[in-house]
Image 1 (spheres, helix red, strand yellow):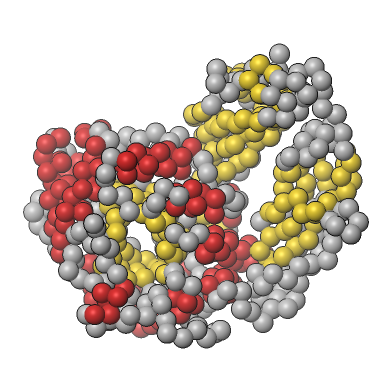
Image 2: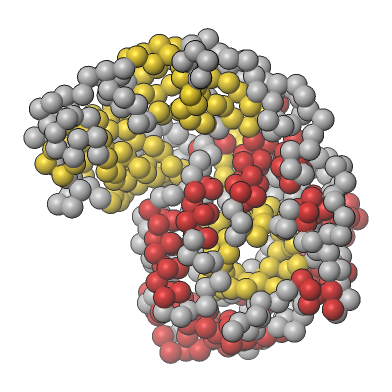
Length: 554
């Protein structure tokens, strides 16, 4: 049986046994690592070698606040083997030595990736490429196999495209899918005790890409391939919304028997900072930490750097930045407080509730659902705005219909031909609740008895600069008898084009898209639902999304 390198083993070799299991409770104002350890989690950061060597403030924060570190670039192929057989570990050793000195875990990043890999590797034939990959893994992982600080590795990184197909990388094009299993087996041979991970971005929500990852991990584990954990990078942006199915997604992977972790968290904003953006960013950070805390198999959260001074974001996403929890001058931002208080279990002196939300407006009313939108609340208590609870007013026993992290929600599962009186309350990071908003009253539509009453609603689940995924588009039979087939139409914004779809056949005419059911999901009983999804390409900076979903059936 494989034995993962444990923190107890770290203690045996002179490091603290209390990395994740402290002997005493964390002090309320303690550093992040103290509170993470008290919760049995790690809080990590990615480190760059230059400021680590040259800036005292950078070193002090890295040592004080985090109990896990990842080399931002020093362990990648271009850094460790720039030329065939020429290995250099100066940067990687610097990271590992720093971790050893400060009683921290090291997560190795990354062994096999399509980016930051030298051209000499990319030009190899199949046999030579496979051998080079195996030898590289043996050398890099093997160097640290007996070092108790290095406990895990990103073995394979970013193998999927946004549709959920395998990325057309030089690895895949030369070796096929088998390179993934080969890499994991080579890593296990090099270090039987390290935890081995697969890592990707835009897989935080339940979507086509994360489902492809889920299916791959399940398949590999059934084949005996040693995939021990799954990394969800977490490069988020305020303009694209929060992945509200994050906790659900972490849990479904955990149910496969793997460890899960957030590996590269940052939350970028457009333009300059202001109080509203800071508060929204803090909410994103808090929600990610809370999602991990809620899933037993989530080992922890790594923030991709900690100071805006050395963030990769502005160079990669022009016009966006300020993505981390410390500013350019090493000052703590509201997002730091959000992470701290989430890890501290909500211990906070904040007793000030958020302001009361505005009156909701109802739209897209169907027999079983409606979309509500309201004016956002603000929070001045220090713990930050965390989201909203939505209630149905029913006298003494008001029912909570849902929660949202933004100032809108799509309600589902409502009763046809029924009046609803609904109000909203804001909540902050200390679980203070605002007053009740004024209520909105609406009546759901009459369910038909002819078998042709269907409705469709679309949810934008994941976005990036020049594209996004809509998943799910939920199709519901609101009638009282079964339907055999359905057709959904919707409108794409100007300049947007469909680049992939699943669980429906899509055709376009101008900006009008028609989605037709497949043979396996067209039959819906009364009240039953199914879903499909699609991916869209769009001009950079255009944040419009599809609208006008309608559904018809024979």
